[in-house]
Length: 287
Picture (tube, helix red, strand yellow):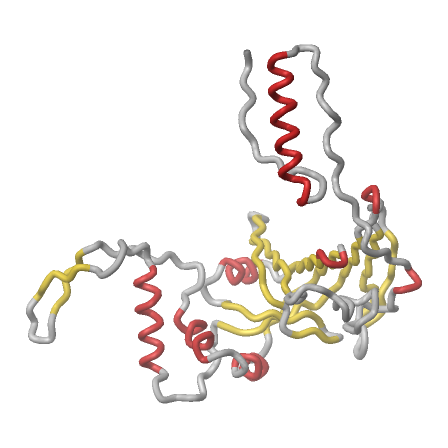
């Protein structure tokens, strides 16, 4: 008898029925094992998107940041506490290898979408150095809506980044200085040899559980704490700051029943100043 390898299945249907579905599946498997003529019950149906719709008449001439159905900001009644959470994707050239990570959108205006991060040692920094094209993706489950943004990134000036940096908690500002983002942290052995101020070497047992690299990070933080001790004003690091994604494509995706989703794509056809940043073409796409 052949054996089926175990696999993870993100089962369709409502989460509330998962336990009963599991029991039903187990019972069906037992019946099939004892009765070759047993017919399996139909598979559970995937949940449907029913929260909302999106129509061309609801869209603005440009994807401007205001609270309308056709804007990059969610409706006022949006249930999520962090609707500004989005995925930032970058690609390294010439390999074309893509990397993604979750970030917070911090600013939005007619010029574009602004996020803040490390631009010195991170993977996104290495990608951006070879390719300024980036993408953002928002998912608002409460209204079953997705917003995709594609465009070119530009770094904010130090003065612009300092304005936001000053709003961060002191620990977060120190952390921005201390973290060599994406670099490997080296675990330390349980026993290390240190040199005292009198020149004598002695063996010190590391406290707590075996180190996995965290000790190096905490030491980096202590060094920065000492550096800025007594200073209320902390300058933004030159390797850290804002990135503005200047969009040339924005798509609004609204989940609909039977996977016949509403999709509208804005594409920039001409540059310009002021609200909307130019002229946009709006097209409905197949789901």
